[in-house]
Image (tube, rainbow, N blue to C red; front, side):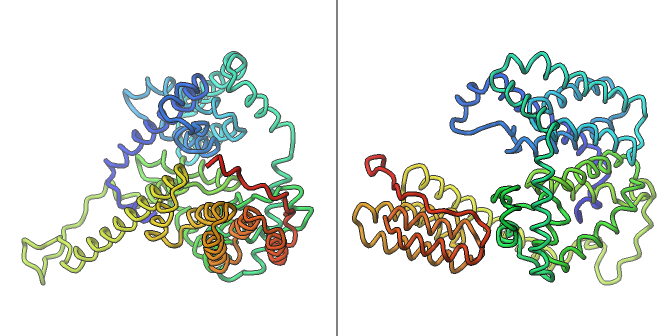
Amino acid sequence: MVLGPNIPPDAVSRMRGWLVGAGLVVAAVAVGFRVAPDLFDRVVSDLSFRGSTAGNPVFAAAFLAACIPAAMGSKGATRRWLVPVLAVLALGFAANGERSSLVLPFVALATCLWPMRADRARVLLAGATLAVVVSTWILLVAPFLRSASHEVSETARQFDTLTGERQRLAVYTADLRGFTRRPVLGWGPTNTWSAFLSSATPEEIDTAGRGWAEAHNILLESLVTTGLAGTAAFVWLVLRIAPRMARPPSGAGWAAGAVLTLAVFHFYEPLSLTVTPLMFLLAGVSARAPDRATAPQPAAAPERTLGPERAGRPSAFGRVGVGAALAAMLLISCLALGSSALEQWGRTHYGEWSLRASLRLQPWRLSATELLARNLSVDGYLGDEAAAAEARSVIGAAVRQHPWNPHVRLSALDVELLLRNLPGAQGWVRRHLERFPSDPVTIPPPCPPDPASR
């Protein structure tokens, strides 16, 4: 949001084209995966493209919906491309097979009327294009596609039931109860599952399920994870931005429409690494001062402390500070990439050395910690007592460091089951239920993997 107002107007105009182009790629991948999923398996095996390049159909639908105001913001000669572009985006919506894919496009069209203030005839044309293409896919194309016909019927059934709404109501109630337990600073980032599972009643978990790690509402998610302190800052930011978004500067109306579309999405779906940062960036773009793009800038005052050759240049301290910050971010990114690659190697090739190396780069990486503990427990089951002791030590340290993480505690349960230690597993269940009394956890019969499968 800080970057958005400082993007030059000509770059904002190019951003609109970049966003539409990316949306066309996302839609094309979604359609291609529906029509010929085997073709994608030949390119990248063991990877589902059901969510297109966004990783999840719901997030892909939100991204495509944000592209509609951008497409509608075209002017001049680009108008003749409006119908083909919207047709491709509509195919992406239809191929996603989610209820959001059928609702968000028309939310986006509503934002084109306000605050974008697009011509009503163009909005009607866009709505007709979306409706015709989506209907054609559902009625004439999907029945002949083995990969899509079942999901189209499932999508239709989502409109016939209130199951999703009942689940969300149960989650909202439990999360609000969790917020009241830590109202000032909240539970911390990514800890919504801990708040939900420790605060929900058995009836709420029976209604919603136990795996809701996100509040599916950006305001409630802020309350649970950052408490009143973080939510107050978030609300203050919204109140500062909203009046400016209502009157976006020339050439940025499409950004305001995209922000409102994504805001509606974030009030009933989870945060996303794809669309949530995009929403804040475009909010900054649409909140740029109205006269920034057109009004001439006043002449700068004479520079008193710097020579003419230094005027307008950042200070040496600023250059060093920015360089140091960029270097630090680059180092952290390289560590994360290296740790992730080593973990993936260990997951694929059962390489304990690579998991240890991954944890040396990022000792806080829970997924690698849990995988190493499970692999060591298999070695312990095969008779390696040192590996069994290390497995318990590794997972025990993880539980102590993350006492409110349900997944880590259940990983400790898995370690004991793999080691054929039923009393130890029962002890972990008892301690787990002390923190999460409503969690319907039971002890499955211990069945470690066949040693020959290694």
